[in-house]
Amino acid sequence: MNSLIRKTFLLMFGFAAVAMPAFAQENQAPAPGRALERVEQFKKIRLMELLNLDEESSIKFFARYNKHQELLREVRQKQIQALGRVQASRKAKAADVEYDKIVEELLSLENKATEAKAKYIDELKQVLSSKQLAEYLVFETRFQQNLRDLVRDMPRNRIDPLR
View 1 (tube, helix red, strand yellow):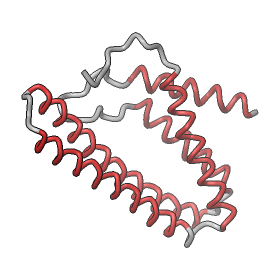
View 2 (cartoon, helix red, strand yellow):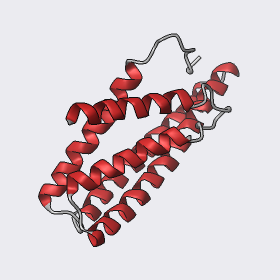
View 3 (cartoon, one colour):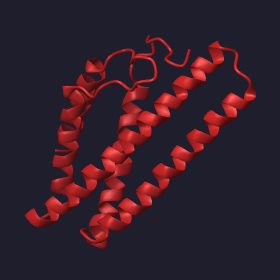
């Protein structure tokens, strides 16, 4: 069964990767496509199965989950914009002062994401048991690692987006 779930996940992620635009507009993240929505739906279904939530707990959990995911999307969008400014600064042969501002912004955004995660985990303690929270954290870590592995293993013949 685990093999079937992994194959389904790989297939869904493969579709997501193909459906994503190859290049985003300058300073903008790619809009999430239908395939990415399917991956997110798959993730939510697996979470419901794993955590074995009743209806009330499920509503509370996913309200917090969705709020946290939206906050992370906003932070990632700002990070992408800052990285876009690095590219623009490189082309404009900007002074170190400009790069310092961008680096400070990126560090600030990273801190914001870390603080948001700590707050989110505290909020989850109100909904999940200690065992469920631990299972969730393991699932989240493995899910993210699987995504990174899939992206890493994709064909390398794409253009480098950092140029």
